Image (cartoon, rainbow, N blue to C red; front, side, top):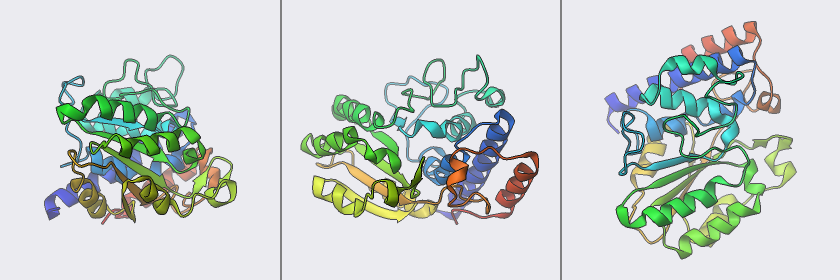
Length: 278
């Protein structure tokens, strides 16, 4: 990745974090920690020079790559990403998670350009992504699915993980946002997923582990995805819940809490001062 593109992605990621904080604070909503852990992943997919082939001014373009945000509770970061990419006006973000608004607290595809699937009931995104990849295999379109680590407790994911290599779906890529915290505690205490990479590898997936806040590493792993390959790819992205804000990082409470006015101001200041993804 050249330096100009890298700098542009750093700026994009910083703007996403500030937008998410603004949205969640305004709506007194939840899941800010889950959003912050996946900022660099969304940036690598959608940001300047991002991996996804897309036409924001033509959301239903037949040649587009499909993206499914299976961790639908982190809707705010996807909405912020789509707005920044030109799918819909930024003014829509001001209505996030309010009665009657287009942008619900979980990802909704109804009337929202760029959202391929309404999600939030965990464990559904990968099975649907598998079906999309199978249907699009001959056309050359690619499918990316972002999973949370906690939703890997759902057996439907492992059924899809078993099927995808059998179907030789090289056009399917999964990114696991492995931030180690789920709704009721630390992942290792609820249901230990380890050794996670070995599990996927044993199912026949091309498996990559990396720092999920390293934009160069994410970009490189995505660039290596071969849509015509005989195996799908999984990227296990080690992340930190609440990344970028000191009092949110690696704290279960920020799966649910909304920042107060004072906390919001401190969080924005820390994000502006940080240089995450470098």
